[in-house]
Image (cartoon, rainbow, N blue to C red):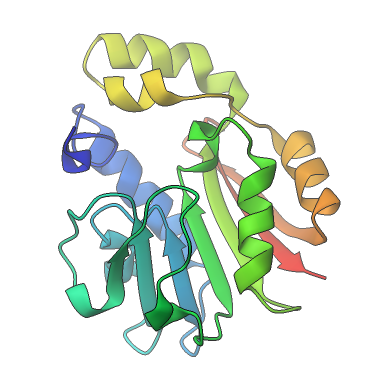
Length: 190
């Protein structure tokens, strides 16, 4: 399936939801950061962060709209491309990604491999309280049906915090948005 027809475009409100994720995550990205955007989709986070940020995106499908020099196709669980192995990232983002993983702890493990101590890991994910609303909205074509079908588990604050601590990350920011149906979380690698 063409991912551009998934979370970012499929469903009448999906573009709005994606924009909200980008805006909330971008609040925690500073102008001198070097960002690795996991599951970058079409690379649109780049439009919401300062131009001075060095941005690199990874996804399993090539469908981005940004500068292809900074976007890389990598299969899930694949190795980091050689062009990125020497880059020192200060931030890793994973927006609307963790809920699609059967083993969410592996996301923290992967981030741990590329983020130095003191680096920030920013993620967004739907809150479990919105699961019924999301499922109904997907059936009605309001939200992405494919994204809803691919959800493995919706994680709340406590579960996210526990996963993070097991991998050596500390939660430093936690905010809900969209009426509490979504959440943005910032972790710092200890």
